[in-house]
Length: 385
Image (cartoon, rainbow, N blue to C red):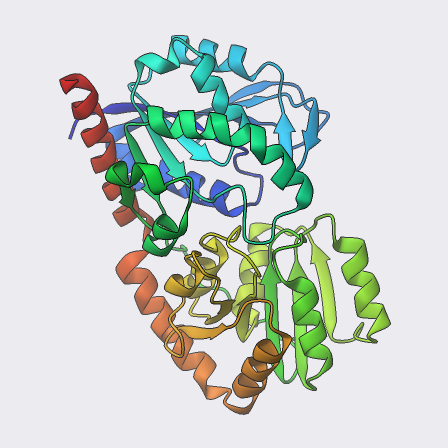
């Protein structure tokens, strides 16, 4: 296979802890990538006070552009176009891999250098879910025009699951150039032991930003109805204060623990120590749920929701690798937790099955090989046009 020079345009990059960022890191450090691809990444600084930086991380050139503000969960970087053009001139990529959603990706539409190259768009999620923040819905009226232009200009589009591809309105006009490739993760180099001080009963774990669509409030209310169920929450976000207040109001301080941001080592230890990873997201803004793979990688089953158009209930197979509940339903979630509490042996069985499914579908080397074939098709298509 040809040696490619691929420029990734992302929102953030490792060590920022996020699903897309973890996937991108594992992708560019995978064996197929290391053997076939030179990589550069341009993304935003994830800390507000940091200037633009350029560094090499495990053989990957990473440019993080200084951000001036964050509006509607979106970093604003006034110099992104300038840095993009400079990196293209220096790195000379032959493919641009754009991770969406990402407001700064529209800089590609303004860059004459970028427009000379084939674009592969990685469609991680629609901007609008089924129950969007009203501010996002209002802003999307302007955003969607540029979004459609970006999709029209792309040579290939990668969707992370068939349900999401079929349920995405922005992708509907471009189905002929969409290819479904799931997200993936690398294998861990060691196992992590269960914590000795874990609670008795059913131990639940939630990982992710504390935001409106994740379903934290729903899960905390469900736990109130069931004894012998404990929850550990990892992550920060705009709902942190209100979720902690709800926990106090429901007198669940002894059963719900907020850890905030943690290191990778602590994260993996917490996964190893839980009985069930929970992702009861209420809308398709949760497009895939990479954390479901993080659990499966460590033989842990997952609970998630059957949100129409999302890939979550494809990643988790009901009563095979975990359990699926109806979205935004306190009754369905409570009944599922009661079922697992009464049948604790299922967690081990589902976890083993999840681990087997991870090996068959979600190992990063296999995912990377599929993405390399998309690059090959994109370059051939552009050369033949």
